[in-house]
Length: 369
Image (tube, rainbow, N blue to C red; front, side, top):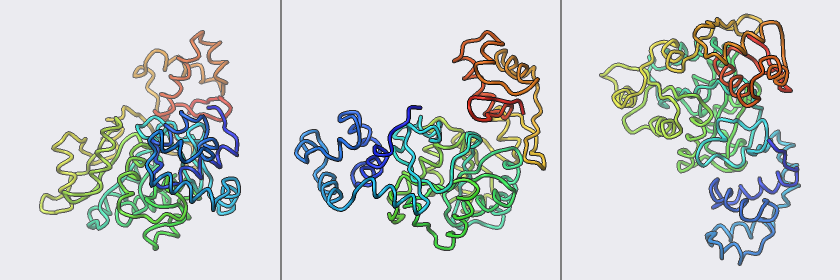
């Protein structure tokens, strides 16, 4: 990934906070003018001529008068809020690849390389005791098998999923429908602080923005976009969890659904998803099987004990795993040792990393788990 200057980062953030400039329009403007700073300084007449709505141009005009982008970025940093853009190495690769990917992410906490192995766990805001129990059980199993848990920090299943991940010593990511400084519900402010310490609290909405209902479909596409798949636990027939599942399908993600009592209204969403072809989940093994992952539990020192069946691997995967058996190697060393193309080695390492069989140590150095 090519780096951008802090000045450009500041203008990206300031521009993305303008009502009417979303991910698609932002991409178009950056392509047309070359940089966010150029967009910020262009004449209003020019923006109107290329089709930017009058309201958005008016909002930008107001913002120019009240905001200095670089001072604004510094103020966010003092609040512990970082700004990530798609060019950043830390920006999640899986999210970068979705349609209408966020062009700016406001982040409290940090993303880790292990977050590529993430699953979303979502469900009703008013779970039954059964729903809570199932969430705790599945999330505990997922954390044991090295997954980062992604959810929306809402009441109900979301909150149970985040808390269980933290209690099990795992990583978790909370995606908000408002600014990262506007946690809702208010009783989750403390939970959000813990999530930020052991993962990240993120949003594409500007700090200060309230979590209004219209923001949540956009929020849900980020939840699924970050994840290998979405696990749905309880929800009514007309449920926001089904919107998240819909985004997952559009993004090529797996959809998993936990069956529930047919007498419960909270089972309607999962029943509908199962009828539509979602994978039925009663145990973590159902998820691992669908994702073609074979992983052992996490050891007490935090390392994942991986059971590797070499016969089940593709030829390139097996060769890379075997060459890493004797110690840590840089990508270039693997290329030389195996006499394989660099692109092939990089792609193979990515697949093995998702499967939990190798670990990226930083600086393009890898180890076998």
